[in-house]
Image (cartoon, rainbow, N blue to C red; front, side):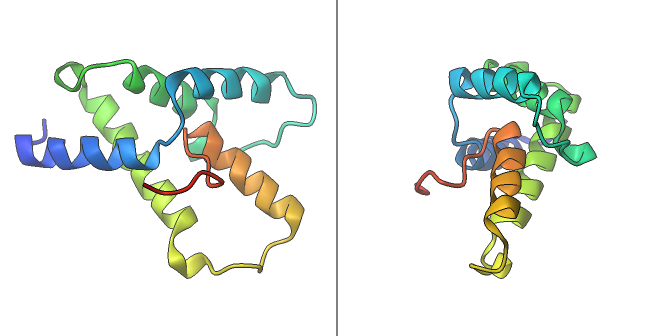
Length: 116
């Protein structure tokens, strides 16, 4: 298990990048799974990860498991890589940006929301 300082930092960063509420994420996962045109997300951003993120959002920090920590690190790394300044702007088509947004929303991050 991570030490207290590392856990505090991970908890804060996870809750910074996961900017959707548990209710919003649950609704998005239901809609995304039901959509006939849903985009098949990459392996690391599929519904199981989204469901795990949802479960983490409903936990207290003291109740986290090693699996939870692994998912939290994965989500922070993925969202950071997908939204970092090195991505540039205006390079992707509207359809590509929509697919990217939907992948990120499956992880609980809506890139259209202003950063805190």
